[in-house]
Length: 186
Image (cartoon, rainbow, N blue to C red; front, side, top):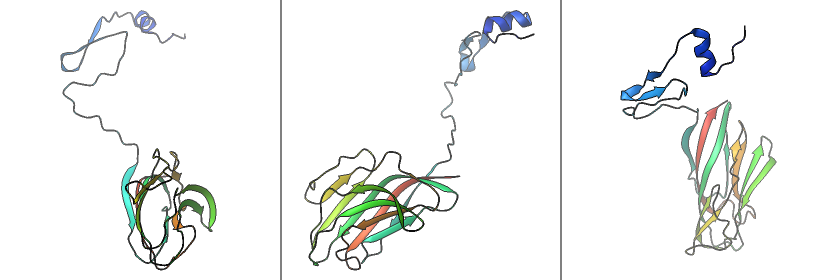
């Protein structure tokens, strides 16, 4: 015999009439509403979605081409990329690019290209993150924001590369990169 799973059908099938259920912390819950009740004295419900937040950095100087490889058995969600770039006196326009590569160096995605170029003998600060304004002029003379995709998730062994697209003084310019991310095991 199949019984429809409505509160009334269940009460009819088992022959018991339930008028109320004692709730938590003195609350009462109607029997036919079946809500999830959280006690008013409970401070938190633990939820673990598997993501762990962290920061990776490359602070080595004399290098304007940085690569970061996602560890095996890991998915990495890029939250933000902060770049401090000090150009030498070598003449030329630098332009920062953020791209994704698979082992190779086969490019699989071109996430962002800074909206301005950087000339010689300057220090600029760049921020790449989802939802940022796509600035085409420096703010406060040395700060630029550029958006990256909201779904910026990399798979295991993908490579995130941040570099000067023009390689003006690749072995002399100083570029420091800090990446905020969330990882989970796959």
